[in-house]
Image 1: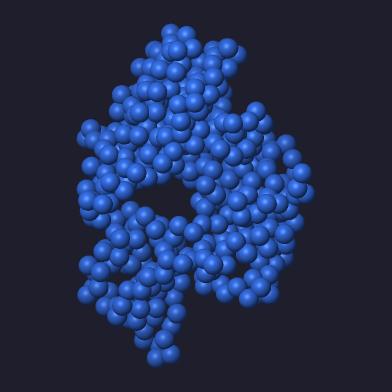
Image 2: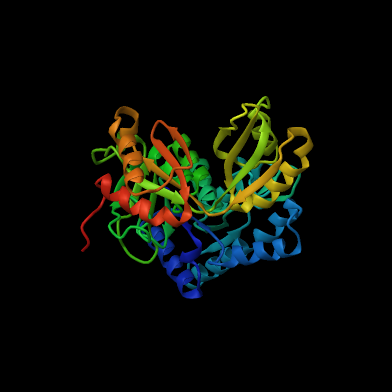
Amino acid sequence: MTCIVQKFGGTSVATLDLIKKAALRVKGEIEAGHSVVAVVSAMAGTTNTLVEYVRDLSTTYDRAEYDAVVSSGEQVTAGLLALSLQNLGIPARSWQGWQIPIYTSSHHAQAKIDHIDTDLLLQDLNKGTVAVVAGFQGVSLDGRITTLGRGGSDTTAVALAAALKAERCDIFTDVEGIYTADPNYVTAAGKLDHIAYQEMLELAAQGAKVLQKDSVELAMHNRVRLRVLSSLRNTPGTLVTSENELRTTRKHISGIAHTLSDVKLTLSALPSSLSLEDVKDLLKSQHIALDMGHQKLFPCGTLVDFSFIVPAAEESRAIETLQTAKNKFNFHDLLKNSAVAKISVIGPGLQTEYSPSHKLFQTLREKGIEVQAVASSDIKLSVLIAAREAERAVSTLHTVYQLDVEEN
């Protein structure tokens, strides 16, 4: 039998009724002759509650104990889905990350999967038992529970699909697929029927919330065929595959992503002789991602302001880490701005054409939207702007790049 991996996100298992519907999705694949691994997230809102419990106790918490707490939500959902399947007469059991086991690095809260031992899982699958796996979690080589970062259940699902050589990996969520922009921001956003791994990777990395970045990277590396589709409606969804499998002609611009979940930090009046790589290396040593770095030289020529963004979830740790190095870096002040948005235009046309880049800056200039920083890659161009301008910027750019679709 071919294996199918089905992943159900938090909004797809938010209630017992939705968990029962997820069980019916699994049953459909069983009846089609497949063996099934179902990967589940915590019920919607559960992880946020658990995170708040930890942060209410301490802003400088033990990250290993953080993982022990926040990983528990998936355990509940896995057990409930296994029970729902059993009620339908389908043999099923729940699995925690450490039981499989899914071995990861020891970077708590941001662990990376090292390898998966599938022997026990395959024994159950070969008996016709559905494996219901708690997503988001693994185990380090020293035996501690780890988590894979927010959205990590996507990565669990893709990693299992790769390890089991599954026919495909279906990601069920509360939207019908991948859109050209956040449909909550742009009513004229259109659903993509098919998208290449590389473009999906950039969309995920720049704020599109449907798939975790690591999951797309893993799918691309292992050529796992992904489908993103609604858990509430029987619609085709979006297929994510290699470029040579695309069924449609690639557009110059695939979509526009945005994120409001970053904080801009500025180290004010740094000596211009300081290597900014030292600042980056310090944050990297604490597994804190730095992006959109840029500097402004003082008129005197001996001092600079160095600004960058970090994820809002890492704000406290980043500030604490930088303050401990104040004497080393000899900066005057550490400034914070939470009211920023990163807007990213994604598409292969950025590799070969001048006009898409020119359009972005011209459009923002005409709308009076100030660009605070710029970052680019082969198929991505990102700008940092004020958060209050985000919705207007995304909507306008979506129209300028001719991504709007007619409303039904």
